[in-house]
Amino acid sequence: MNGIVYKSTGSWYVVKGEDQQFYECRLKGRFRLKEIKNTNPIAVGDRVVFHQEEAPEKGVITEIAPRENYIIRKSVNLSKQTHILAANIDVAFLVVTHNNPTTYPAFIDRFLVTAEAYSIPAVLLLNKVDSYSPDELAEVKYMAHMYRDIGYECIGISAQTGKNIEQVKARLEGKTAMVLGHSGAGKSTLINRLSPSLQLKTQPLSEQHAQGQHTTTFAQMYDLDFGARIIDTPGIKGLGVVDFEREEIADYFPEFFALKHLCKFHNCMHLNEPQCAVKQALDQDKLYWSRYKSYLQLLEGDDTYREGEK
Image (cartoon, rainbow, N blue to C red):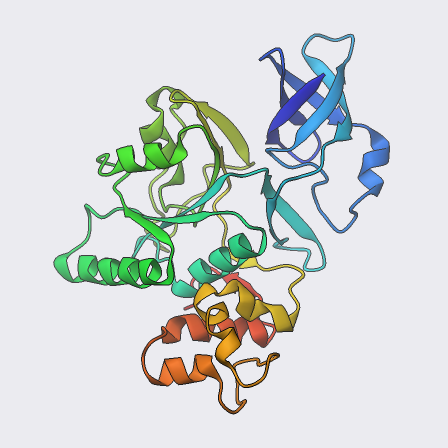
C-alpha cells in the first residue's frame, strides 16, 4: 500500500495509507544501511510503500519514493551527521519573533539559504505583532521591508489574536507546508489558530532564559480542515547548512546572484576582488550589510547557527 509519513520518532513511523487510515510502521532493516550520514532514513512527508502486518494497524515500510525536495540540517550532537526535518514540501514557513525569544538575522538567513538550495518557496511569519512597543514594531517593520525588498514574502501575524491568519491560510490552501522556528516562537499556537480542532499543546516562555520550552518532540504532519497539510517541527536552537561548496554559497543569496554577471571575474567570491559588483552595491547601500555578514560567516565555515547568536 502507498502512504505518506505523518510522524517519525526515529524507530517507528506513523503512515497514512491510501485508504485514509493511519498505520504504525517500522522500517525494513536493509534501508538502515542507506544514507548512513543521516540520523533519520525516513522523514515526515516522505512517500512510502508499506505492507500490513497481521497485527491491526501495523505495517512495514519496504520502499521510499524519491524526494522532490527536503529541508536538512546538521544534527545537534553529531556534527558529522545530518537530520532531515521534512520532505516533499510546497512551502516553508519560518516563525520569527522580535523578542521572547529573539530571532536574529543570522538564523533567518541560514533558513533562507537552505530553502533556496533545495528550491523550496520560503515565507517569513513575523509573529506576536500584537505584543510589541511602537519602537519594537518599527524594527519588525524594517525587517519585513528588508526581506521583501530582497524578494521574500513576509506576513505580520499574531497567532494569539488571529491577526492576518487568513493570509496564511490562503498561502497554505492545497499545499503541504513546514513550519520552523525557535521554541516559544509560536509554531503550535499558529497551527491551533489555523485549525482549532487540533488543540496542540503549548507552553509559555521560560522566565529565566526568555526561551521557549519544547512542546513538540518529534516532527509531525497534520491535516488542516481547509485542504492543506502542515508539518510541525521541534523548536530548534541550531541550524547548520549542509553540503555547500564555498563557491556556490553566494548563489543562494538572490540579491548577490542577480549582480554576479556584473563582477569582473566570473568566479568572484565577493571578498577583495577588483570590480566586484556586490561590494560596489554594498558601498552604495544598495544591499544589506546584515545579509553580507551572514554570507561571510557561511564562507568562513561557520555554517551552524546557535540560538542567541547575532
